[in-house]
Structure formats: structure tokens, C-alpha cells
Amino acid sequence: MARRTPPRRNNKGKDTNRRGKKKISPLTIGKIEFVDYKDSDLLRKFVSERAKLKPRRMTGNNEKQQREIARAVKNAREMALIPYTNRVATQRRERRSDDRPPRADGPPPRPTAPPPGSGDEASAEEIEAAEVQADLTAVESTEVPAEEIEAAEVQADLTAVESTEVAAVVEEGAGS
Image 1: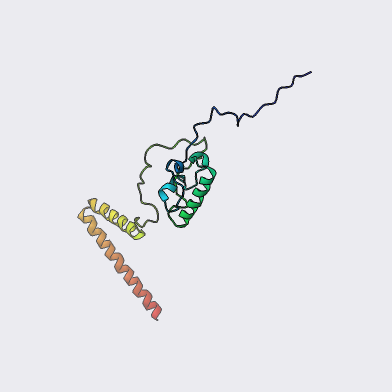
Image 2 (image 1 turned 90 degrees about the horizontal axis):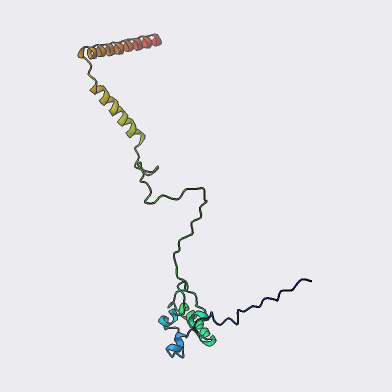
């Protein structure tokens, strides 16, 4: 027949070796018999950094003192001597998947162009004017002999005269 193991005993209440020294209340140390809600310096000793009441095991108060402290803190909060909450900025834990590489050290790279819609980019007219200026500069930089320029001017004048004569003939034909 199988042996039965003895039941496990819970030693939480009997393990006095792990307990530290019993705390003594600041009220007892200061021999304070009445807790005044206007004494905000005293009340701050019983409030955590997040403006919560500290428990008895942390402050060393007995039950009666803890009730008096709680009532005084509530009254002081009502009179705006102690804040209801303190904002504590904590950094969020980074939630990243393992397949992404870690972030690079140092500041992010600086952008080379202004962001879209910032108003700093050139308008269409400015871009076109810059292109025309570039074309004009390119034409001026190339050396063309004077005879070719004169021949081109004569050809342009001849074309203008011919187009004017054609327009006059068309108008005469339309008028009759």
C-alpha cells in the first residue's frame, strides 16, 4: 500500500524570524494626541508620492491613529492643503517585436529638404523662372558667330512678314 505524505503546514503566521523591527508611528514619537488637518507637513509623512494614504504597516500607526490620519488627510484635501493626486511621469516599457533591429544611438538624421506643406518650397512660377534663366544662361554661354545671328534674324523677319501678308489675304477673302 502507498504511503501517504503528511499535509503541508502553512507557516505564514508563525514565521517571526523574517519579520523586521516593528515600526513606531511619527505620532507616537512626536507625542501628538490630536491630528490637525491644517498641519500639512505632518500629513505629508502619511501620504505616498502618488498622493495615496500609506498603509499602517508602513507608517506604524495603530488603528485609531490611522483613522484620525485618514480623516485629517481627507479634510486637508478638501481645503486644498494637500493635492488629491500627484502626476508622476513614468517611461513606458518598450514593446517591440524581436525581428526589428534595435534603434540607432544618437540623434535622428537631419532632413535635407523642408517638409511638404511648410511654405518654404518654391512655387511653380519660381521653378519655371529658374528654368528659363538657366536656359538663357546656357544660350549666352555658347559662342555663335555674328553671321549666323544676322541670318537667323533675317529669317525671323521674313517669316513675320509672310504671316502678316497671309493674314491680310485671308481678311480680304473673308470681307468680299
